[in-house]
Image 1 (cartoon, rainbow, N blue to C red):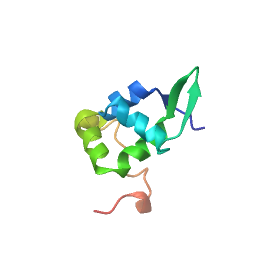
Image 2 (cartoon, one colour):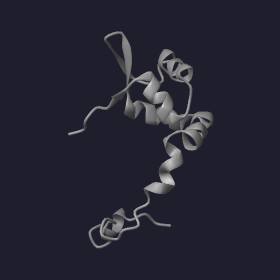
Image 3 (tube, one colour):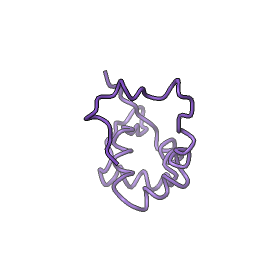
Length: 96
C-alpha cells in the first residue's frame, strides 16, 4: 500500500531549497498535484519530486539548499544493514 504524502507550500519550499513563490508558481502552472484543505494547499510529495527533477534550476537548488545536500550522509556503512548481494537477483544488479 502506497501512503499518500502531502506537504504544505512552506514545507515544500524548505525541503526543496526554493522560495514559497516558486512552489506557488508550480501550483498555478499545474506542474504539481495538490488538494485544498481548510483553505491551504497540500501538495502531493511524489509530484514535487518529479517536478524538482524536470528543470535544472530547481534540481540545483534542491541539491545545494534542499534535501539533496544530505544525500552523501545517507550512505550505509554498516554491512549488517546493506543489501545482501546474494539476495539480489543477478539481473537486478546495475551494470557499471
